[in-house]
Image (cartoon, rainbow, N blue to C red; front, side):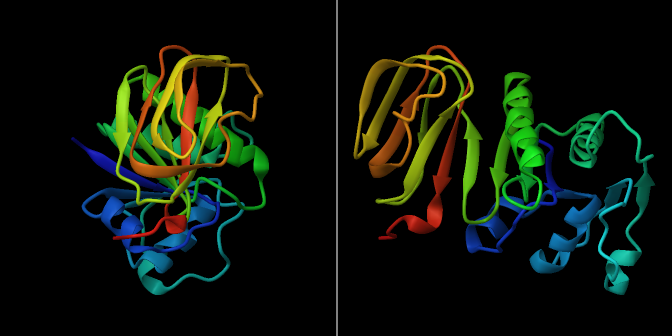
Length: 214
């Protein structure tokens, strides 16, 4: 498996879990996402974008990162361009670091939708800000290793059918969820969290720091 981390422009907090998730991955920074390299103590192998939001001051070791410049008038965001480059180089798994928050809500939404599209194409995708994580749900049973009490929601990007949730404060058994429903918001892990989805597009968003270790 060829694993890449894409540094995006949203919020990012360094945590032990995030360090483990990006360990051993190849790093590509998208425009302003380069600022996270200093936070994480890493040096990307490539920096891509139109650089209209690049930090004005960078440490010397980051100034030396190879750049691939694109015009400001383009049909893709810097983040999507970075993802495309990683895929061209054979990426089969992506960590989208800095995918949430930031000044551009439209970019954050695009990262969620992009992750769903990538997952449907067979790419293993994790979105993270360090304090929250997003994982596209396959049409299969899957379990998650989150601590007891971890807050999570399931975001539906369409109508959902056959949604089952086990190991949670509020469990579900093969339910249908209308598009736009808040039924699957603000749940809590109770034991081993298991989710199964028969039809529809959805993403699990978890807040790992809310859980109780041990």
